[in-house]
Length: 156
Length: 199
Image 1 (cartoon, rainbow over the protein chains, first blue to last red):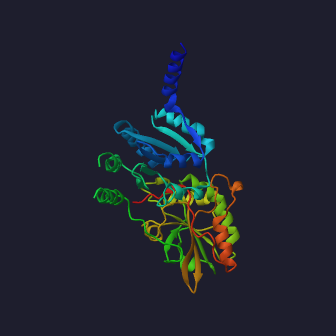
Image 2 (image 1 turned 60 degrees about the vertical axis):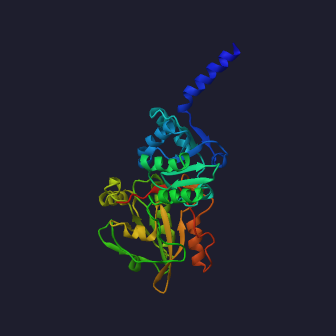
Image 3 (image 1 turned 90 degrees about the vertical axis):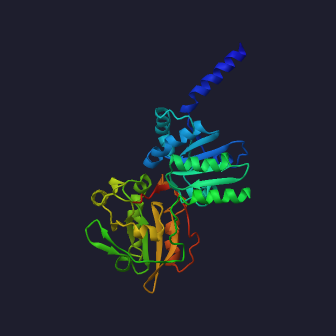
C-alpha cells in the first residue's frame, strides 16, 4: 500500500513538474554548470518581458523532446515577478526545467557563466561536461542553429 | 583529429554570431553627430563637457533602461556641471522595435523630463563602432586635448532592480576617479540587459 501511495505521489509530482519554477541563487546555477552529467545540458537565459526570448522558446522545448538532452530555462525576471513566470510556464505548458535566478548582482556572475557573454538576453549555453566542450550563443537563436550546435556533441 | 574536427565545428557555430568588435578601455572614441529629440543634432565634440562625456546606449522599451531613467537624470544633474554631461543614444532599429521610434523617444523624453540629450543612431554605425551590445550600456569618455578616450565600459551600478540597494556605483566611482586625476579602479563591468535590435 505504501508503495502504491509513493508511486502515486511520484506520478502526481511528475505531472505537476512542468508548472514548477525553482527560485535559485547563483551558487545553484554554478553547480549546474559544473555538474558531471551523462547528458548534454542546454541552458537558456530569458525573461517574460523579452520578446526575442519568447520567440525562440519553442525551439528549446522541441530539442528537449527530440534529443537526449537536459534543457534548463533560466528566467532573469525579478523575484517579484515570480507569479508571472509561473503563469507563463503553465500557459505555455513548459516541460523543460524552469529556474528563476534571483541574483541581481550581475557583474559578480556573468563571467562565471561565460566570459564572452555581454549580459544581453536571450543567451544560450550548450555544455558537455564530460568532454568539457561548450557552445555559447550570445543572441537570439534559431532551431537550425540549435540543432547544428547539438549535433557537434551528440553525433560527433 | 577529433579535437580538430570539434574545433572546426565550434568555429562554424561561432561564425553565425556577428563579430562584436568595438572599443576597449583606453581606445580613442570617434565623434558622432546624431539627431536629438528636440530636432537638433548633437555631436560628441560640441556637446561634451570640459572633461568628457558619459555616453549611455539606452532605449524606451527595455525594462532595465526604464529602471535606470531616474538614475540617469540624477547623473546629469550631478556631473554636467563637473564637465561630464550625459549623452543618451538610442541604438535599436525602430522597424524591429517600434516602441523605440524617434516619435516614441520624443514622447518618453517629454514624459520623464529628460535633462540630457536623447539621440537616435539610425544607421547604427556609432553603436557598432563603439561595440554596444545591450541596453543600458555605458561608455565613459575622458577628454584629453580634444580627443576622447574610453575610461570605463559597462553598467551604471550593481542593482538595476532597486536603486536604494545599490552597493557599488561603478560609473560614479569611475567619473569621480577621473575628476580627482586618479586611475579608474574598475574599468569594465557587465549587467543583464536587453539585446540591441540590429537591422
